[in-house]
Image 1 (tube, one colour):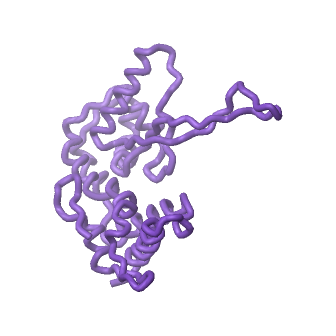
Image 2: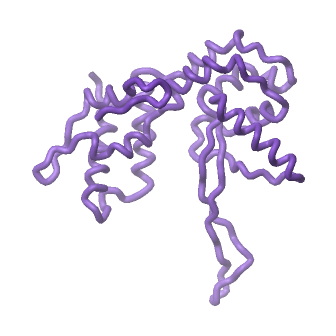
Image 3: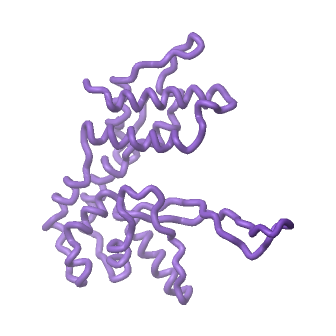
Length: 229
């Protein structure tokens, strides 16, 4: 399986390492390669701990943080957060809300926060015939720190809290080095992410053969990630 990094278009180091270690499983007389689980594998890639860190660190010197950006960084969930914080704040005015969202977009472009979506069940005022309350699921935008963003907060917490000027050259390289995973650490992050994905649904009991094949290959890729060379 080939996969190019979206940051620099070079071969993904995680996929390359997995391919060299992967032992194709046998199902119904067929050998399954990694392409059978390509979508799952791509979803589990630890990009935020890999070359995304390099890209963010190389461009951070042009970023200026205002009061809103600093406040968001100080209160955003950690880089390992699975769900993130709801990105729909209850602010008094439309102007305040737009200012907040604009700050989030700026931090996202700088590689300091990530955004996503989460479905949240909320109780409504309606009731069913049996008297039970009615719940509906709504999709909310979420936000949490990137690994590099978390290290930026760790290195510059005093400047962020006190509104001091941030001298990126002072701690940028240290923050990037602390955020960047390599080798076995990068593969372990892939393995953990893939296990989390597979826990979401009963892949092995899926009605279609393609999904069952994908689950088998995905689990074998976890073994490959943790196999010692």
